[in-house]
Every structure is written in structure tokens, then in C-alpha cells.
Image (cartoon, rainbow, N blue to C red; front, side):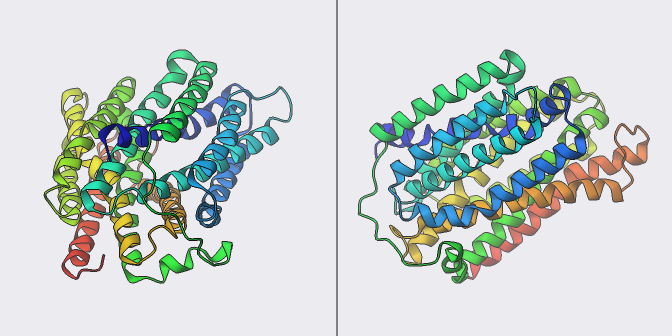
Length: 406
């Protein structure tokens, strides 16, 4: 694979990630403030759409193993783009129905494109260095997409954001179709029920071990993301600087991708992922002791933890591609594996959101609280709990590595 070919493959990761923050951050506020939707109904629709999104991933994985990768990606991008544009342009009436339909369309297109796109990447290399090159290109572009998508609606408006996504999807698909490498062998179509496609991956011990480590490790940044706004606003008193801190974090993560790619040529992926987990803990735990107004200190933590976060993005999918190879399913069931992978990831995000808020409530924190005990509880939930989860995931990974579990 040439450098240009890998970059052509990874470019589509930018527009696919572009919609993440607008959907999760801007859309709820937009429909509450602009469309005047009741919060209870809004929350019910958002939860229902997300559960539907997670539930269809295993079926999409089955489909991705039976449809040509370029065809499935190209077809899936159409409902993704249409749904996103519709989402940001609600009508004057029947707003709730419009929101549900446009979210369902967006999620369907996004999930179908993502599963086929990730499965395509898993077929492109059969050594750890090559796998990491592919995943780093895709996830690095995705970090830039999150950064642009998160800021553009506020800077230029929702109309510009929607038009930008459509343009980026066109560019990304063109690069994928004409510049990305193709798998070296033709795919054999595996048998199986579409609703049971995840059974084959789950039946293998190495897949279960990897999914366990991945899920536990993913809880940490998911809890941090849920508590971030509260921590920055109430503990640090820097709500206005929140976009700056996010930009530092995502840019550092994207900038660190070449580093993880180079290191994968020399070191085990297990060792690198373990090092990334420990580096994240070493960089992030200091947030617990930050005083109010610590702009420079928190920016440094965001930069260093962002660099470490690159390992969480680049290395687990590369390890999954290795597991697929080891199980003899390369060129056959990549879609099933990544359908299951995405389902677990979305389930973790849902659990983390509820868990983070439950922890805050149990520790006695209330929104806007300024007493010392409440702020200490907030800092504990934001910095210490995720680090403890990271250390537990690191111990699990070490046990798996020493026992040659995956």
C-alpha cells in the first residue's frame, strides 16, 4: 500500500465523523430552542433512535459480507447525507415525527457506511504495521472531522454545516473509489442467518477477550466526555474556553497518529496499547488537583491525554483485524466482526452516559454547585473514576497478552 492509497482510504473517515458532535450536542439544543420541542419528548426520541441505531449493527455486518464494499458505502452515504440535511432543516409542523425520521435515516446511512468501510480497511493489510497504518489514517481523519463538525455549526450556521458535509462526503467517496487500495483476494460469502451473524465472532475466545478489554477501556473516555462540560464550567470556571480545550484534545489525537503508526513497525500492538492506557492515566489524573482558572494546566492535560487517546483509536481496530485473520475469517466475515464491534461501542456509550450521571448524583454533586465537597466529587468523577477504569482495562490487557488470548 502506498502512502497516497492509505490516505485516500482514510479520507472518508472525516465526513463520517463530521456529524457526530452536531447530532449529539447541537441537535438536542436546536430542537429544544428553535423548534420548541418538549424536553421529555425530545429525550424519548433521541434514546429510541440511538437504541435502534445500535440494534441494527449486527444485521448490517451480515449485509456488509454479502455486498461489494464500495457499493454498500456509496449507497449508504445517500441516506446519511439526506438525513443529516433534513435533521438541520425541520418543518413548522410535525417536528417530532420529522426528528425521528431524519435521525433514523442518518443513523442507518452512517452505520451501514461505517461497517462496510471498516470491514474494507480490515482486508487491506495482514501485518500489524499495515493494519495500524490503515486504522490510523481513518481515525486521524475522523478526529479532524469531529473537530470541524463540532465547531462549524456555531461559526457558520447549520446550513453551511449541512452543505459542507455533503461536499466532504462526495470528496471522500471519490477518493475511496479511485484512490484507495483494493483487497488482494475475492471475498467468499459465508452462510448464516442475518440476525445471528454476531454468533460466529462471539464463539471465538480471542474475540471475546478483545471485546472485553475494548469495552472496559472505552468506558473511561465515555464517562469523561459526559462529565466534561460540568467539570470545565463548575470546577474550573472556564465554560467559555471549553471549545478550545476540545480542539486541543482532538488535534493532539490526530497529530499523534503518525507516532503510533511508526511505533507499530517495531513493537507489539499489545505493548503499545498498554503503553497508551498508562500514558493516558499519567497525563489525565492530574485534572483532579487542578484549581479554578487553570487554563494552561488543563490545556496541557488535554494535549497529552489526546496524544495517548490516539492509541485507543488506532490500535484496537488493528487488533480486531488480526483476530479476524487468526480465526480464518479474513475475506469472509469482516462485516460481522465490525457490526458486533460497533454494537458494543454504542452500547458502552449509552451505559457510560447513565453511569457517569449516576456517579455524580451518588457523590452529591448538583449542577452549578460551588461548595468544596460537591466540586471534589465532580473532580473525582471526571478524573479519578476514568483512570481507575483505564487501569483495570490495562490489567485485563496485560493478562490477555501474557496468556496469548488475542
